[in-house]
Image: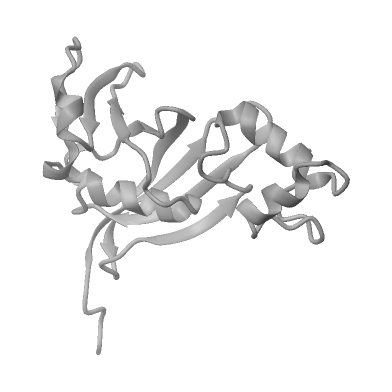
Amino acid sequence: MVGPIISSRAAVLRVTLELEHREVSREIIVPANMTFDTVHMVIQRAFGWKNMYLHEFYILGKEGQSIVNLVGDNENLAYEDDLLVKLEDGFKLSEYLPATMKYVYDFGDDWLHRIETEKVITDYDKNYPVCLEAHGNAPPEDVGGETGYEEFLDVIADEQHPDHRDLKAWVPYARVSGRKYKRN
């Protein structure tokens, strides 16, 4: 009898971009031995972003309070804070499972994500992440935060808007016909 070549521990994570007016989430399965710098890249890929900005993770305790801040850049280690701050590339997801986390990307647009561990799997048969499910369109990079995203959606939906053509050139995958980006 032939079994799987690989069998490892993994986590099914629900990554939800916290937006007031729409639902944007991804369900991903990630090998538990991945370091947080790699988990960051998985999230970037799942949301269609290009890793152009700083980011950080907050590991939350049982009461929802932050217990550790994992940062992606040595510069962020210099800020004084009451919270324990560590460089993310030395820490594996497995060290904090099961966990609820926050992930912040692009400190200008301030995209805040909630990451919940839906389950831990002990016999994952791959050594790479997989996006299991996606809901909603992620905002394009550099759109100006949630307010800018709402404005972007209004302009993309209105072919008569004076900025429509420029935004279509900037984000060519934003279709009006077929409505990839939808207004609620």
